[in-house]
Length: 280
Ligand code: NAP
Image (cartoon, rainbow, N blue to C red; front, side):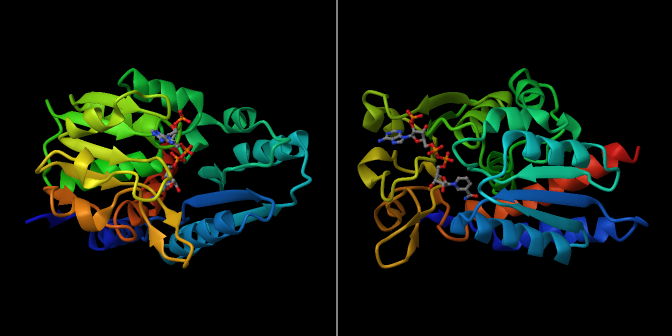
């Protein structure tokens, strides 16, 4: 029988603990999110982040900038936030419009305010096994899910489908730092079916509905579905063919209700951590 890895309870528990801790301080931690343009999905994510942060007791601000904002203007906003003592975490919602160099924007954020863990300093520290100021929220949430469900990582073969800077690559480092043997697959990988079938822990972060079918899964494997895809009839589905794969996997995350809620919980956890660093 498959074990369902649900995150609602765990993520609520993490947020409640954070909220409790915040109530001990005179001033709340500050989280500022910058959103550029009118991307509807980004707006939904940003509103959810703001709402959850405020509910937990954070001072949360959203700066909405028009699509036409220039690189310089955006960097000036970041400079102001870098120098604002009330701001502990800065998050620039991706994707950014094509005329903006997202790498330069991320690099402009001070590493100790980079709540998303995307700054090269934080990524570099993660890769060499030092503690970053913050770790990318989605991969960090996946590790918490594995650990809370007592799924062994050390010595296991973890296969990650997807090598984005947001999910696949940081997750590879996190798993490697916990002594997993890690294989990262991407669109140019040959024999991806065979590689996935070797996984004790299989992570799908591709952005394609039903990308992982049962014939790509080893019996008893732990399957983590990061994907968020909208079907033609408006339903939210992951990258894993859940109905088929759940007959074969040992553990599986559902979509929605698996990885997603952990991402916001980890964002708040990162903000609190940065607040503590700034107030040491
Ligand atoms: P992304 O930047 O588009 O990266 C997708 C990755 O999948 C790339 O590395 C790409 O390979 C690889 N890929 C594409 N087609 C493939 C194929 N046929 N075979 C093997 N690999 C293939 O996506 P992302 O930002 O990592 O997000 C992935 C999914 O997770 C999306 O559905 C996104 O919405 C979701 N997501 C969810 C959360 C959450 O909180 N639950 C957070 C972040 C993302 P190349 O590098 O070769 O192009």
